[in-house]
Each structure stands twice: as structure tokens, then as C-alpha cells.
Image 1 (tube, rainbow, N blue to C red):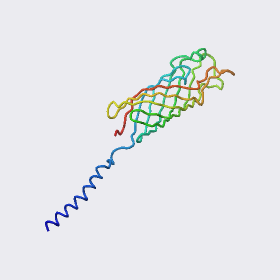
Image 2: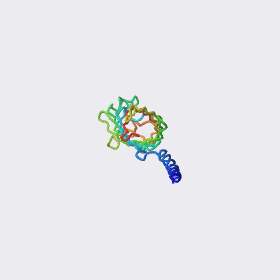
Image 3: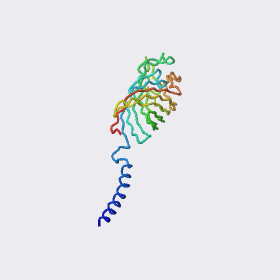
Image 4: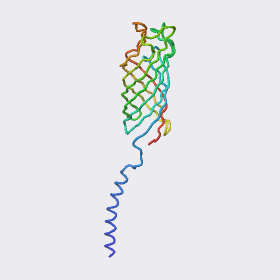
Length: 201
């Protein structure tokens, strides 16, 4: 009988140890694979308004493994007059834009393809009125974004990025039959801000 007890114990251990090993190799099911992030940044843009423009941006991101999808809202305000349009456009030109980006992340570096659309409100001085009776124009751009992230604490990251866009729908200001101002064909945007992870890994 003692030999039978030893045999039963050896068989039980041989079955239990591989099962324990497989359990140790399996990642815990509670670890989040999808991460939700909220961000706020300041952006400096060139080529979207008659002059360089500055404004805030807020962003919501859904990240899964090394890919992410984000939506962003931006409000830009011209920092002055553009040299070409100085005789007609005031310094109060603004833009309200929405941006959607699909990104790939590799450690602290990320690269995105982005689509942006919104409206531009040109500040026209004096008694001149744009042809069509309004000063709002639609803008559509598409481009690339590249940047880097630095984790400050477990929940918080500092990120900076640079974007280059092709302007597909170019806002303009026309008085009579003459275009007094039109957005350039390309635009550059630089931004820096903070991102907060709602469910950090």
C-alpha cells in the first residue's frame, strides 16, 4: 500500500505542475488591452489663416496595443495680419477645426495619418464685404503627424508633435471678382501638451 500511495502522489504532481506552468504563462484577463486617453495641448499653425495662428486643442483617444484612433477639436486665432492680405483682413481671423487621426505607436514614438475639416472666419475690415454675403469658408486638409511621448507618472504623458498637411479645400476671401486672400496649398502645425490615461496598464 505505501508504494501505491507514492505512485499516486507522483502522478498527481506530474499533472499539476504543467497545469500551473501554463497558468503562470497566461496573462491576467484583468489587464486592460484597450486604453482610453484624454489630452489637451497648445498648437501653433502656419498656412491655415492669413498669419501664424495659435490656439488650444482637446483630444480623445482609444488605443489598442500599438494602434490608436483619436478625434480632436481645435480653435485657432491669427496672431496678426498676413503681409499679402494686410490691406483688407483684420487681425481677428479665427478657425474652428475637427481632426481625426489613425496612429501607429512604437515605444515613445508615434506616426499618424490625419484628416481635418472645419470653418475659417476671416476678419474683413472697413465697409468691404466678401462676395456671397458671408465671411465663413470651409477648409479640408489631409496630412501626416509624427511625435514623441514622455511618461511623467503612471497616468500622465507629455507629448509633442509636428504635422504637415495638404490643404484640399482652400478658404478664400473674394471682394467683387478678385480674391483678396486664399489659404496656402500646404500647412504646418506644431503642438505640445499633456495626455491622461483613464485606465493605465
